[in-house]
Image 1: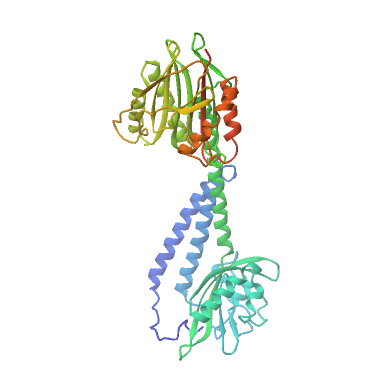
Image 2: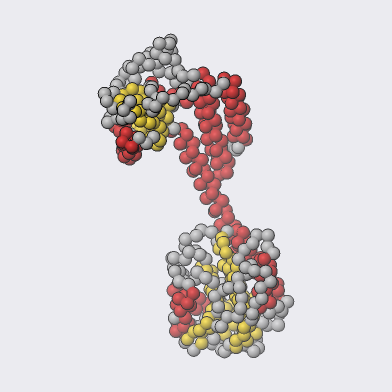
Length: 477
């Protein structure tokens, strides 16, 4: 086969035989090591990770086998010419077809071809006949006839590659599927260049075609087993995160009375709305707790991220919040301690929260916030936002100071706490305005649970890109 370009170039000197023998030995040793790793992988196929490991080993063995045969061919030189003794009958073009090794060796998977544009003649190697499954006695297909053996969906790709090569002189490098006469579909990788005449015009085109069906099959198996492994891990992580979230968030359903006895009690209800677009659990949480002396703790918050790590961090924050609140720590100081806890965490994270301490004897609500949406207060059929004290995101800066605000509630007042993402496609003042528009419906509700149900009916449908929590507390006496 003539060189791809007509310009005179010095012939490349092959590497020494000793060097090639050393590379072949290294390849064989590496292949043996990979095969040993493969044999150690479980064969029952039940574990997604073991299937993925075996698929990777199979792919590596396939590529190492190809490399071994490449090096051997480079060391031993080209196949015998027609003038030399042949082990098989010559083809129609007079060339000897190299023998096919068991299992389809590299030599039987790589063929070559040349198409003469001046005479429209085509010349194929015996290997190419084998790859395409065609009778060696049949004439080689011309460039115009070649698309007839290509899969319908891939013909435009072949046409574009050939056109770019012949018109613009671009090298051919692409893959397409071919249909063999026996109905088998194979994947072929084609590389080639135009051959120029003395005047610089394209006289012919040569190409090397390699059957990469097995290689692509191995890679597809690796991809499928990897995806299966990722899906298995995601499902496992999701299950663990859900179990952790359910174990940490308050187990009560419906309304909760805080404190259980005494005047000025709160009727409390809450709900966590899962994301409709993300399968992983987020770091949104809510909490309500009766404190020593009859006070009540109300809080909502969220950590950035998803998964088991975030759910674990959420559990840590809730536990710390409860413990410090039990000691009588005020909300502003609580936010400071939580910020320090996140700042000192091994796995840095950002979070937001709002924490309220309600004293039923005086109906006083003390609260603090850390970069979180402020509580909404509904009274006599209207709603408003509380004035927020100073507070930055938890974990954003060391030693941050958090302010504290206070408001006196009245019987029938309703307090709504929520996390970002409660109202899909809305944020900031737009989200607050939509919540405040629920004031008339809240006024007709009899319990906090009815109010939460109203919020869920209004905003709990599809479209949530993240988890969200809502907590409603109503002063009942």
